[in-house]
Image 1 (spheres, one colour):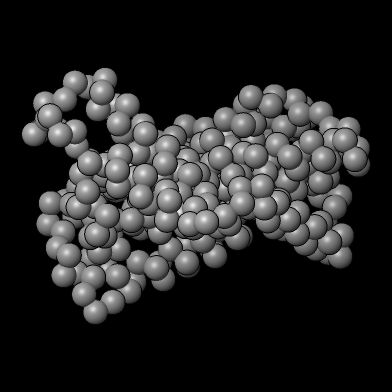
Image 2 (tube, rainbow, N blue to C red):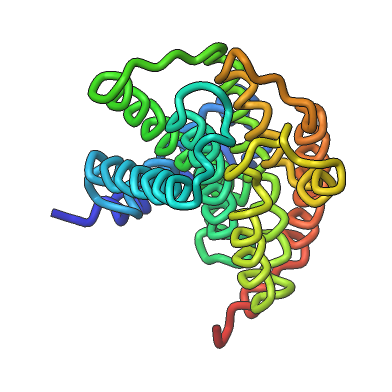
Length: 293
């Protein structure tokens, strides 16, 4: 049996070929073009999901195990440091998970978008395949995996350990989506500068992800920070997403040191800036940039 990723590659290339009776793809009707782009994105999403493991269920289990180990490590650290009493009144594991899952989604999305095929990759020569398709596929596949992981983890915790109550699940998932889309925007920034700075871009992406281990604010309650400390974290959109998510999760917590408008504004600005660089790169890209690398 052929490798699933190779099968997806073949499907993407077939879907990317323009119809024989239309010489110029720009003359196609917008509805037909939208369906073709949707088909390309769908198969690209499947291809990205199968990159981690050829079996989607096993891939989900691996993602769940990784999240569980992350939560267990932080739970043990809080207990050893005697920091359990400093959290929000409510379920302590739910408090930890409200930070861990947003952080993991944010970091994995940045890595996935950064690793997506860019303007200089050979598959970009198969129109109408473009970087918008590869970026969308990388982002959606990460969202799909981490949403399933979140739902399964909460269901198992609620069913097997203790019943949980989330004050506003829709608002909490909205912050989850905001953290995801912020990760997409920052991933586009690193991806767009990769052809110009091929050695520095991966280092910058790695350093930024490591800084967010602390700067995300997942290890403490933002309301307990003094004013002098808030400025060290308030630049980070993930800090605002996590703190606002905890306000939706716990009925007795109201965030004072964060807002929803800040990550929204930063995300829109980074999206515009990143896409401007990416489109400029697309016009000036050369296949020889990858020669010798």
